Image 1 (cartoon, rainbow, N blue to C red):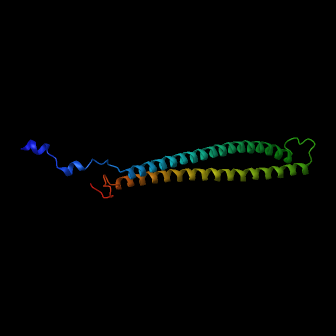
Image 2 (cartoon, helix red, strand yellow; image 1 turned 90 degrees about the vertical axis):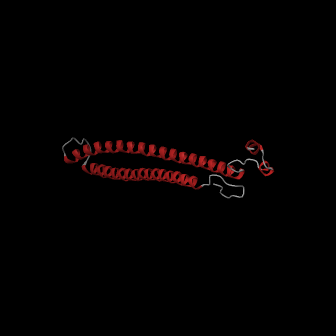
Image 3 (cartoon, helix red, strand yellow; image 1 turned 45 degrees about the horizontal axis):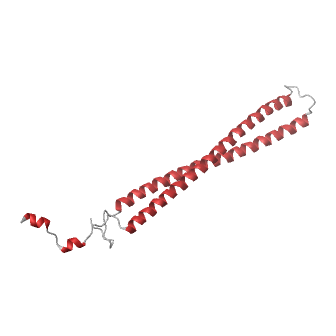
Length: 162
């Protein structure tokens, strides 16, 4: 009797075919989400590379600027000695040396302002990079939360079965 019960099936059980765990629509949605995530990651990587190139350019400019400031400093020290009479000024008169001195001071101020601008740009890049990392963490946490809220299995009508 038990064997007969095991092998007998009702007609209603034969009519139902096993359904895959994800419906076609859910699979399509999942593919779209994965594609969007991939595109987002590529954009993030591109932005990161742009910031990196910009940061490298700023670093090179800062190094060049530092070199120019050192050269101006050396020239300024020599000019100051000439103005004080501690060094041989050659054929230069005092007015010409003062004119060179003020031009030197103006150039040094210009370089100092430029250095400040470069440092601000570098700080902006650091902040943009930090913001990007925070946004990525947020996306990851939201993706984890979204996955934990999805139903394990759903019927074709969208009702949760488990």
